[in-house]
Image (tube, rainbow, N blue to C red; front, side):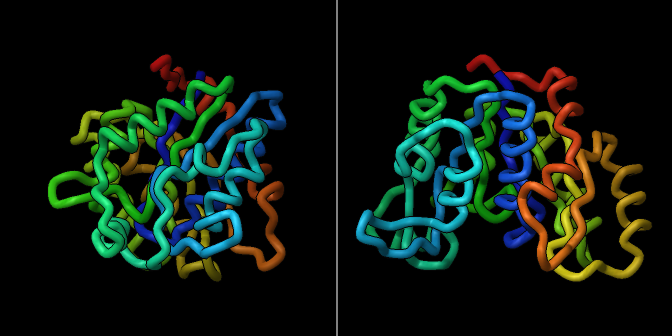
Length: 233
């Protein structure tokens, strides 16, 4: 089974957008897919309970029919950093709990799974632990979504360095343009490709009428499937 942890160079760089595209690309190859958003802040109150837009998008894109709670076990209403939102509602977050919930969901039959983080690599969960500790606990290779905007080279190189220092493999990265194209876009992509030393899975441009399906067409999922980045945990 192919399992990956999707992280980003910052918040609002398109992690969910790229995760949806990867799920659709896997579906097109006949793979059974699941995705998990372990923790999400900024959820909305609905008759069914708190719901997160990103988690709902993942639920729509995956092939397997899972309960919302299996996809997003920790849903927080305040649109702020997850550890602060949890403190405000009196909730103690821990890596052990999130890893357990992820493992429970991953017992569902699947061939391809994504765990989507929140914000960047070092987003705190509590005073000692971060979401990076969850990725380490799961031991899944990482996919890094780079928001192609001013400062992205520094952010991407620091994130890649942190992933490797934590003992995980960076399986690949995606150049995603969350807004209008930045100046010298191609030069920045070349600079990152030369320095990161891992496969560029695809370049997704900014288009007002973009769909997840069109983004999926720009991603090379076969690079991931050929890389041997599998997990049997």
